[in-house]
Length: 254
Image (cartoon, rainbow, N blue to C red; front, side):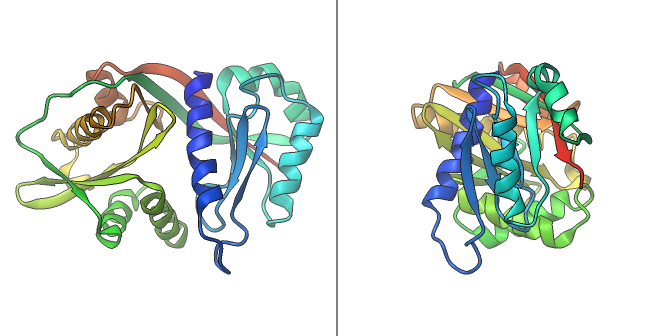
């Protein structure tokens, strides 16, 4: 589970370090901490540390680094942790005023191989970031109510994606997905389907298409993170991906 955790953290840290810096992105950044990274893109949902504590138990000085990183950006310190890591280091977090956020996540991982396609759903690559973002915002609007954060997060995901895909059903564009690569791992993210078209095989088709693209790139392993119990978990399982970890988020009060 730590391998997938570190791979995801490295993917975002690499993107942020290679990103052009201007007035709008000057506060963005990543700082290494105990096998992971504290990540920040102001005004988006990417404002938490991932993978921290995956190589060793966390110490007070680790938390001080993360807390300082977010403090200069006017944000509370937040961590996304493997459940086992949180349990191991819970006393340290509680002693520093961290509380649980109501987020339960699951990570699925598995070997990349060619996946069968559903002929009912057409999935194509796109370079149209605007169209991708618009569809992603519409698909996620019922879950993320801050429209500004949602728009900026969609733009971030489109910029970070090595490949963007759009799914069509009955001639309508109804879903999106993104694919990034870090090392020998394909990161599948931003999978979303318009509410009216869910439970019709669209998300499964999006996963299959991205796995096929990853296979074409020669990548060995794929990972996907999703809310616990979501349909994305079922899609991942259909292609041999297994649950590799559970995650929780904590934030420092005050």
